[in-house]
Image (cartoon, rainbow, N blue to C red; front, side, top):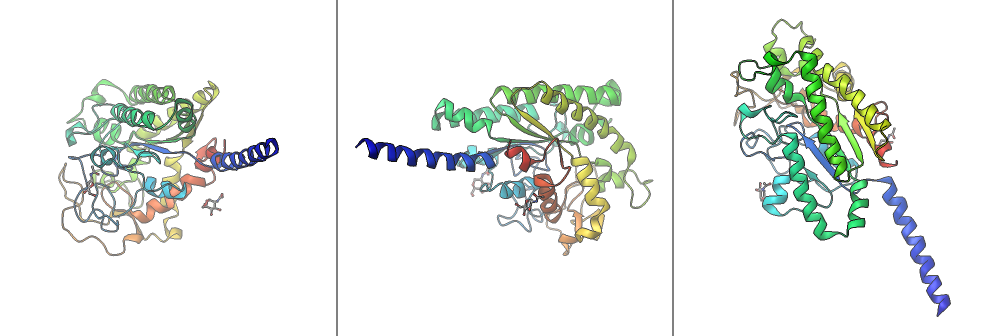
Length: 357
Ligand SMILES: *[C@@H]1O[C@H](CO)[C@@H](O)[C@H](O)[C@H]1NC(C)=O
Ligand SMILES: *[C@@H]1O[C@H](CO)[C@@H](O)[C@H](O)[C@H]1NC(C)=O
């Protein structure tokens, strides 16, 4: 009897160390915070919930600002997760929250004000409140210690800040921020609020953070249309310089958070460089068009999104941009791979490396 027990015990130990090896190499779950670059359909009002959006997506239009999948959809696949549901879907339809939840909201930013003129958006702070609701749900499914371990191995993916510029600071007729703050002060303010949000996520038990830079907004089709004087093939440098002030501070923040040794790992997602590289090397990835939109867009403020029912370009895999600001599915597929395990896509590590830490 005793021999049999220790035999069983041995099997149990061997088995749990196998589980440990598997668990060590991957994340338990994935939480996404951000704006329309990551939003899978959290907004009722600010939404791409009509054709031709979703023309290449198996479920058709969902609210994704894309013809198909978003970067975070591809990233979820690379990490081996089933489709990560939107927070709205977990509330409305009770979708399973165990493999992750996407809280991103189109039009939203770090500041509560950003994007308000577009309709009801869910700012970063409110997205974190929504995560707390998910956590209440998880508390019913797991014991405290199990939940703590699970949260410590969750991937937190944050891609937010573009709208604090393109739907706030850069539109002085609607938003007063540029009259109150100079560009340096504004970047300081954003990063200070951002830090507060990250520390709140840390307090909730999260330990692995991928914090992305703001991409080069001066290269998106709409900025090239607004800044007509931009030489062909170049980006609007004034917009890019503005967001780089945020990015520089974000880099210091990541450095400081890591050195404060919070038992966590924070990594900077090099979105600015990653998107610039993709643009510079567009040809070698098979992209023929890098500054025009694939769908036809309106030409008045508030109507810049794809016009409903208008047939988009056919060669969608040859366009970098789908609409006025968002990459095509083809571009997102490449971006996700780079973000996942590209060399120098994250500092100090990329997402794959962070999983193993
Ligand atoms: C809930 O599910 C239905 C049917 O699949 C879908 O049409 C709807 O968009 C879902 N709601 C949300 C908020 O995702
Ligand atoms: C990146 O991940 C892909 C998919 O898992 C894999 O095929 C590739 O070898 C990885 N590249 C590096 C540099 O680790």
